[in-house]
Image 1 (cartoon, rainbow, N blue to C red):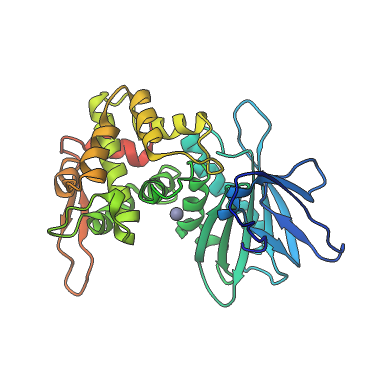
Image 2: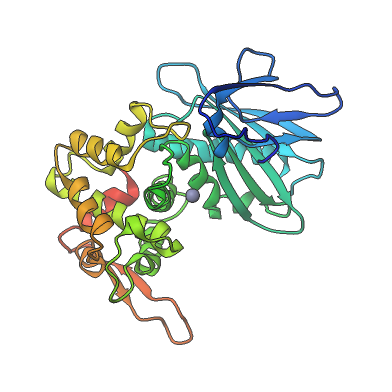
Amino acid sequence: MAWLAHPVPRLDVPATVDVRSPNALEFVSGMHAVGDTGRRFGFRSIDLDEGSFTAFGPLRRYVVDLPAIGRRPARIDLALVGSDPFAMSDEGVRAWVEEAGGVVAQLFGRFPVDRSTLFVLPAKGREGVVFGKVLALAGASAVIVLGDRTPSAARHDDWVLVHELFHLGFPTFRGEGRWLGEGLATYYEPVLRSRARWTAELDVFTEFARNMPRGLPPRGSAAGLAYRADSGAIYWGGALFALAADVKIRERTGGKRSLDDVMRAVLDRGGDATRVWTVAQVMKLGDEVTGTDVLTELYDRHAARGEAIDLDGLLGALGVEVRPPLPGGTEPEVELLDDRPLSAMRRAIALGAP
Ligand SMILES: [Zn+2]
């Protein structure tokens, strides 16, 4: 992640990197390739603040082709780092990435970036995914640290890969908006896995009911989401903002528009993870495409001014009944009711269009 020194002063100039290494030293980078040698890369020098993942040394390389409507397939270059095997086998990892890419493609209508590089590193003796991160400004890339003991059958239990691949379909912000990028990923990851039938509708809303309270402003605090730096606000405050926005857009448009349309519109205007946008641009385009002022209004009230979103009211209307933990348990129990004003909307969110 930090193998290229950043020039000082931090000018914004075009930069080209040529890589020369002995043949024995394997090399793969997510940096934006120039030409077809795989050894020349180009980007803006300022984007080295974020850059792109790069790996040197023993690697197994695979290609994953994903749907890209009306053009050549979107391609993920998959690099399994090191020479130790995964319990799910290389083919199992490849198939899992293809499946997760398909889950994300359902939302956007295609996989969000034409070219990207995914590095999978083994975590010795572990099960499940233990870490994930996207770096995209010098070229779309992501890293996943996968327990080498994870069986193929456990792939639908993982949330990290879908979360990271989702990030590729939304712009990067500089010095703002982490709550929006992480909030949307935290909202859409369970929703998309449920739409793909990896999980059930009840799983989605159980997770929301148990975790979204962490996103509410602390009692007595007047700080809006845009000014809070705690992870509760960034992940779950952002996710609650996304749920409130989705519900309001669906309500105001009689179900004709949803937050999905906002996500597609942003990507259609070039807003993938390799681009820097402002939060204001997203809000403005979102309102334009839904023909409402939902996003601007929610932003002013909850992100700028710090008014709390009525989470209990929202869940109640959606028919998400939250009950105290069972004896011996610590987490609230959740039941879905189908006779509430927005029960049908809840199903549409979690299961996708019929
Ligand atoms: Zn994230």
